[in-house]
Length: 168
Image (cartoon, rainbow, N blue to C red):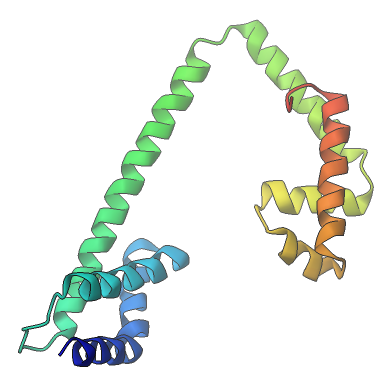
């Protein structure tokens, strides 16, 4: 019986995964998390044997389960964002004018250090740190090895450490 149930769920997944993904994506506007939510719903069904004795149409129930997971995701994201805001406010609210000036000086020195890098190293640093791209993505774009990208990042950090002591 469990094997038949697993096959039924696998068939439901194949037939409805994209519809449920679109539903989740429309609710949270986040591609990766929308995929995760749909997968989590199906894992939950398999782990808890939910829907095992359900004789009604299962698709509407799946849409409701995805919607509820999206709501949970958005609530959690809202709490995280609120906590980040409080944390940032606590850090910077007690700064003196001198501390702000020192911080601005360090940022300017760091930007100057980046501007003085070779064009390829500067591009890799911007892609990796600012755009949060993976080494493999950058290496494919530039047609160089992953190790070369990592070497550029390591050398760039060494340059920045010499320029300013904020990375120690």
